[in-house]
Structure formats: structure tokens, C-alpha cells
Length: 120
Image 1 (cartoon, one colour):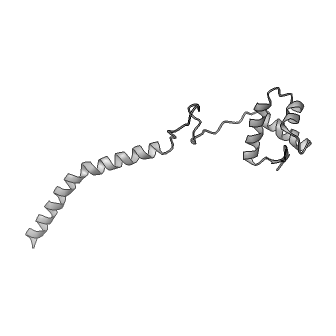
Image 2 (cartoon, one colour; image 1 turned 60 degrees about the vertical axis):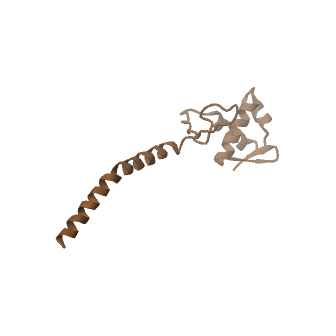
Image 3 (cartoon, helix red, strand yellow; image 1 turned 90 degrees about the horizontal axis):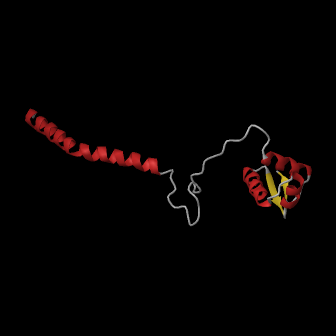
């Protein structure tokens, strides 16, 4: 019986020695895959780096931001359009204000009703 146990232990030890490099490779590949999971490789045509799904959140400024000003203007004038808000805030480029309003809409601060915005 002791012979059988010794032989079995020896066989198991030998097999473990054979499998160890494969196991280490498996763990290494698992770590590499985890590191790559957050990286978007396909950006699409004409899109700059960093525009994929792994976007970084921007740090908010400590002072009043354009979004805060726009939200205040919407609260004062419910249903105001982007053109009206741009005029009220003194923004020359309305396209910029569309981006600000889309950000506020995605944050849930405002919602669009028709062509205008109202505070949510």
C-alpha cells in the first residue's frame, strides 16, 4: 500500500511540474486581458484618440461654469431655445452651447420640450 501512495504522489508531483508553466501563462494572459478590457480599439473614421467608450470624466471648475450659467438661464426662462440662451448668455458660437445643453440633458438637469429646454 505504501508503494502505491508513493508512486501516486510522485506521479502527481511530476504532472504538477509539467502544468506549472501553462498555469503561469494562463494567469499572465488573464492579467493582460483584464488590462485591455477598458481600452476601446475601434474609434471610427475621423474620430480623435480618446473618443471611444472609455471616456474620462472631466474635473469641474471651482468657479461658475457655462453649464451652471445655462442651467440658471433655463430656470429663469423655461422653454428657451439654444439661440435664445446664446443671446442671453452672450455666446457667439451656438454650436458650443448645444454641446453644453446636451451635457446638462444627459446629466438629467434639463429636458428638451419641443425646440426649447426646461429644468428637470
